Length: 380
Image (cartoon, rainbow, N blue to C red; front, side, top):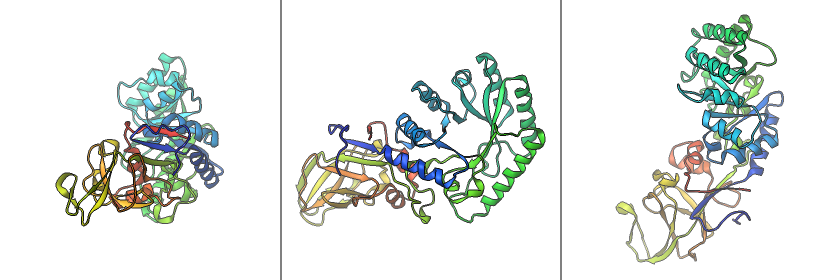
């Protein structure tokens, strides 16, 4: 694989992020939900891909809004000059809500205390706060219960009448959209419809109030869940939200690479790395890859995960360490500085993030978001 022209070869490893792939994925997702707005979810440093560059690329490709999990991410986007609507949804007591309201960050609320805090912050900021009211439709995580919902609506309407808030959305989150046919899907959609009916009866309705429940899986597979806006996350980064149904035409955006830090010939029966969990069965060449679990390369990949090096795939040889791991190159020629690809789009034979996830018994979300701050992101 060739190195992008803006990449520095001096770092032990790097995560190369293809912004054209981000744009492709946004375009594709908009085609899946042509009548809905698209919020690109850029939480967790854009799933490890780089918050600001990805946000800008998503907006340029047609996303109309951005979503973050925590307030700091939203404020970082504003500080970078991003002006598009932003919603953030995990808020704890004592956070800088006045700063958020002043920066025109929309906030989620599912409890009376938070509505009151947001309204107070809006009064101090001298402008109404955009608020999305969240209903728990069956995930039992965030959101007001069905029993709490009418009182939450009433409190929000009172704050809106005062001019402290503007009810900008009604929303929920699906627990099983990535499991085709799961009965919870229809049950949650029915519960969402019930909550919307209660809201409409209370007077919370209109074109300025976005109804939204669809994550990546629902965006590509559940058109009945699209409502006014969809909120794809993992799909923005080109990783399938329902791997058993294929890739949906998405293009993975991240390629994780490193450069061999050492190449040496060792004899047969050489124990490799901690615990000697790998022992050479012949004289062979070992290569040292300078990334480890401190960089997000999961220790569970020991003797399991594969990389691309010296023209073909290699299985990690022995224990993955904090800063490094070893691969067995056999008799193939290799030199210090040669590139190793841990995962990428798979177009040149390298493993994909999905393959890493499958081999480690996890999901692609964890593979890409774990990549640590020692690994520079190179956007191209």
